[in-house]
Length: 206
Image (tube, rainbow, N blue to C red; front, side):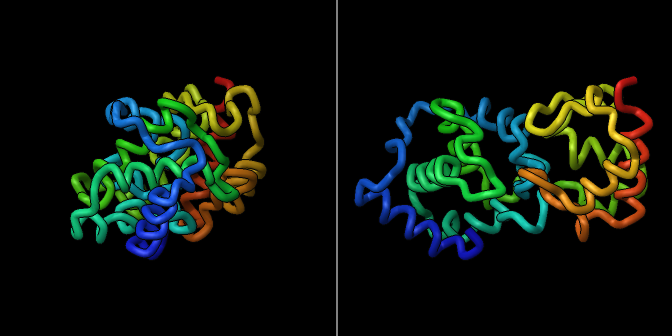
């Protein structure tokens, strides 16, 4: 999705040829539900999308950049919806396939298609979070993990209140990532990684 126009043209061609993997979107999606799901199932942890207030991770596609040119060229909204929908269905590792399914997948696709590339909101860059471990966690980790001390109820990654990880383990995981969790080395500074590791280890389970 880095070369957005090319990616979208390929997607549209596949859809026109009947090569979708689950059929075209039915056109009765709920973008408001899609917005909630985008944040709650973990999309915002990996993908930058200004309207969702997410800065994502530079290792994963920036959805604003991916579709900005297509919006400017006035591609049909339905075409963008179906390209996003197929990306959800055909996701490549580390993104799991069918992270959302059925009507929920259509809702997320409709939401992304409606706001990607519009730049209708600005997300706070990681550099502005300082070394406040709680603030960093809420901005970068809460969409995937449950941690009562941060008011986080994410269900994609481990429940940290149950896991109660040691500081060294958190620091290693945040730095290097693993499974579907992105690595934050290069996105967060070493001091920020240390701060969020200290916050998690000292707060989990309390």
